[in-house]
Length: 201
Ligand SMILES: Cc1cc2nc3c(=O)[nH]c(=O)nc-3n(C[C@H](O)[C@H](O)[C@H](O)COP(=O)(O)O)c2cc1C
Image (cartoon, rainbow, N blue to C red; front, side, top):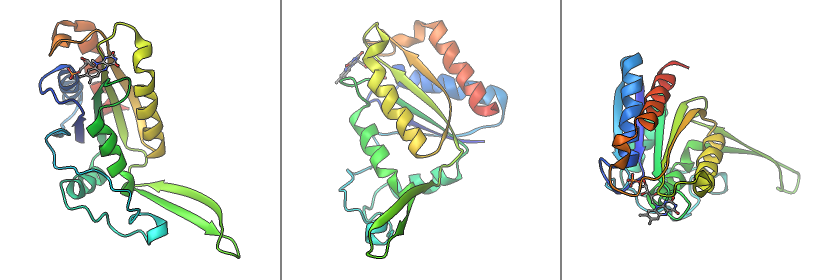
């Protein structure tokens, strides 16, 4: 099984990263797993410029930006499962995670039917990630869950748009300090079990 994990925190080996590692361990406990972990803050992933080249409006051309994303998208098409991990930054996903999702848009293939005057009568989307499994990992500082309501909704809605199959989520609170989650056995256990599910359901 090929898993790609995207770390949306600038802090390596901190809470988001540690929880992602635990998901990976859970998956490994179930089956043979090939893992590619990508630190979004380190990767060369330039901002989406909204050129629209990949869209039907511009003839579905390749994304013109030359950086790591071309290879990442190709490997995503071949992967079986994904882990998207983000800290809560200002009640939303981290900035590189936002841009990463924007840069994933070429994986959506928009189709339209046109009317007699060229007007769009109907529009729908095929996704190259259709049916692929995904686990969401979120870490936040506040001790109450509502702080991450938007974080979860943004990831959930995007998983749905990309027609991925969400296996489950790992959500850990009160993690202001670096790596604080390593002492939270219950949260690590949830992460491990999500990895088991990622490799099985
Ligand atoms: C810029 C910034 C904004 C943050 N905003 C929030 C917030 O709105 N709510 C919250 O609960 N935690 C917030 N936090 C705390 C982080 O979500 C928390 O420390 C998280 O565990 C960090 O994950 P990491 O250790 O993987 O980087 C913020 C942290 C930063 C750096």
